[in-house]
Length: 380
Image (cartoon, rainbow, N blue to C red; front, side, top):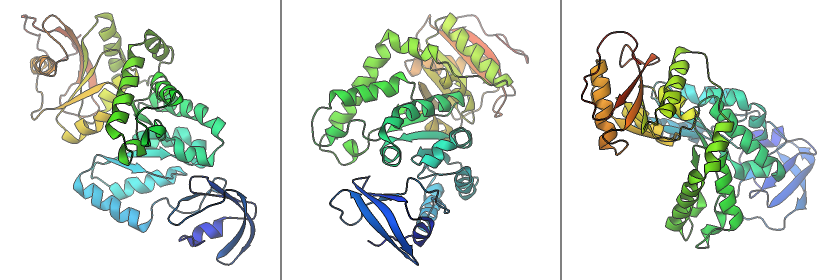
């Protein structure tokens, strides 16, 4: 079998495992020479062309980005995409390389957790990336299957800890590629990811190449809604609260979240330029929607992945407390996130329109005829 990567042949040693076609064929290297390997077939009987292969027990001394990947990445960034999903990451250097290639073009990095080596560097990789995808398909090939549930749970918890959106993906409703309804086990799998606090659950072949794409999306949506209506869901999330940082922004966002709960707010409003304030609020998985208001269209689009965030792009900056409250009330009513008599818990930063300055909180009632106070200090 030809392998178009001589570096991989060089990295493999006698005794290494090679998995082909998502692990359907398992090989063990028994001999090695310049540019070739002999391998014994351990399991599997059939292999056709254009199939992938996995090397689970070797850290490859090469970048996950091929020359074509670099060209594609450059092309995508020039188009203005919001997210770049980075596959087969093994080490923190892989993230740094992608960041350097993206430069100042604004695309965020979604790290696909697919390699055992990446699991070993989980905390550092979560800190370096902007989002995590738990890609159970490749993880299940390269690690023993009984390990996957615990790893998934750990990845979700670690992503919440650092306020990064986390997606659980692959083989969630796999049977719906050819069947109009999922299996009971698949329904439980999707529900488990929601109970654990994932921001998103994702379909793959079910909607990309399956026979029932609309039905698959409808089933997944229905599962999510049923879980989120379960009183036990709220109890589970509240019992696994994420750690908070020690910055002023962390403290103010936490206070706004707690106040929103106390006053039974219809929405928590986060003014945000970079998206950080909305992500801090989403980290707590609040029971009410998070209205993310931003002047950055790219930030609004990126926030679509985050738990409970309804992002709205506004054209003009906010310049005063009065504008802050009026705009929040207007948008909340327009977006059906509040009605007269409802309360909003609002957090923002002074000076306005400057990233990293979250330092104020305001509670207001929609329809309140009393004009807001205007001064240059903290309001609560």
